[in-house]
Length: 334
Image (cartoon, rainbow, N blue to C red; front, side):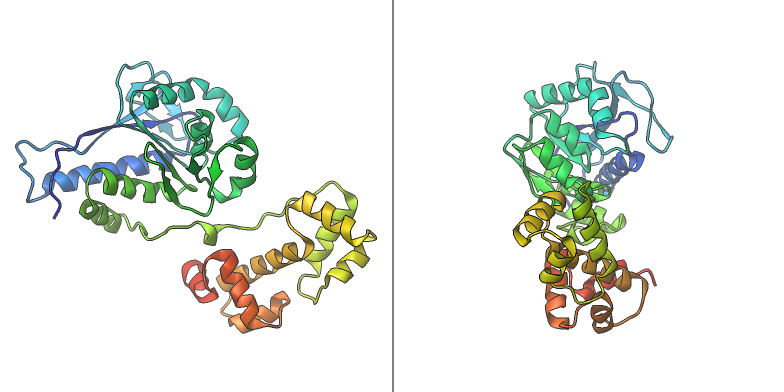
């Protein structure tokens, strides 16, 4: 069992219009369960026991806010309160980033002031955009949802983005990746501020895969479509012919552009070379077949356009972080 270390942390969970309700209640639930487990521990002096985590739900005016799915979230505090928190957590949202950041200026300013007073600031998913706007992540490492990598990098070039990571702790800032990474974040907070034993107990009850270190396996390749007619035609041609043998010479011939011009324009438009683009399409096709069929990986390799099973297996693992067998075990739909 774990022993009480007389820790008592004031935790503020920031809520705002269009935030994700599960990312609010989920963190509150796990921290509350940690309190319950600690209070029920045989090694705890129950007469003098106090909760590890004192959680407040904080909105701009202390008013109820509506989450993106329409569920109301009742705040218990406002940012006008003079309370100083030990830790502030910013959940993610569903909506336009620019709109959220524009409406959240007062919240971001309040977060900055709490940081100056000693609070540790943590965020999950695109809540990291609000944290980044505060300037508190400058020259620090951070992560965010895999689908937001390009936008985050373009906005915050002074932040060291490590998007493959589920969790990054920089001491006074803690960044968690996409959506359900709040589960890993919650368990980690218990680990860091309470005890490893209590964190392990909570992880088991809430079925949190605390060994999950990367979000790469969850990433879906979302190719950028370009307005340049020549490049767009090549993209569509590659997608249509991905199951056939394709060489760079064939791509150049199809494009009616010089080799160097094609490579330069294609890389600028999509972020990848034509052959890497083709590889990523084939890997996405293989992932879908692993998820939805019982075909062997050898069969899948041939179906997506490869002949060398061993080399495609290595490529698959280098991109997804999992072997084909591990990927199927994790994501199979049948």
